[in-house]
Image (tube, rainbow, N blue to C red; front, top):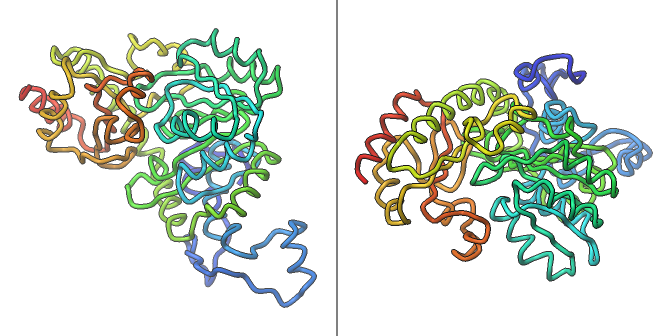
Length: 393
């Protein structure tokens, strides 16, 4: 399927799945074969060394996985894509591909907890220099990039405080020093935002979240410039963090309804954010769709929708969180997001469980924060549920 020929909703259904399948199957088959056989040794060799297209061993790739990779490639308007066993596998394999002792990274303080753990604990041990800037301070980011760096890592909107980074501006600064720009697009999804079109080199997704959409399969995806993706692919195939056929099938199936789900979640999240913003027991609401959000104008310029994720701080301490969350009825208190059902929890048990209280404070994450992933339920039911929960405080 040619890029930009169809709308995102059509691409989500058809990309990677427009070829005839075994016995005329109308959906991508689950190919659980570990190895793929050849009768011609020369053909086998050509596929093995990349001269010809084909499959050798499912640790490298697999027909079902390849269909998913093509789907995200098209949705992100990328040259190439590759898949991983989890979202953190996508992040860590990408970073370890490009970061060696003596390299320098410029990133922001507000990133997913697993990513923060890599920057705070893992890479310093490998003598990689890490500079974490204030997320909303674009001048600081540009200054640090201008000092020289090898990789710029961005996440926008950020997890869990929904801060916004101007991708085009920071990518332009990175290009001046020859740095690779990587953007985690998990919260936005390719329905709401395409970082590659804004100057990024690589875009990451925890496919476990919105892409799958049903909290029943784990995976990670990377898309971007072909030469860079191939480098990460080679690291991943040797490192072994491969995505298997069964979860690849489930993620691709979930992506068929991606545009429908995201449209509903965009609309509901904005209504909920506005309701919470006016509530006396909520001290702050973090959602880029609100006109009062510090990154609202940037979000308007680079996003087509503001997403189904929001967070809000209760007017008090963690004791209020302990009273409020169990009172909710239409929510799973669970450490994930992006599902058809609403999910919620505090950062200390979800996005930043790996970090200490002090580390979360350093990243600007209050203990009274609630991360709320809006599902596809009727928004009036969700609003009523939040109201009765807040009434208990």
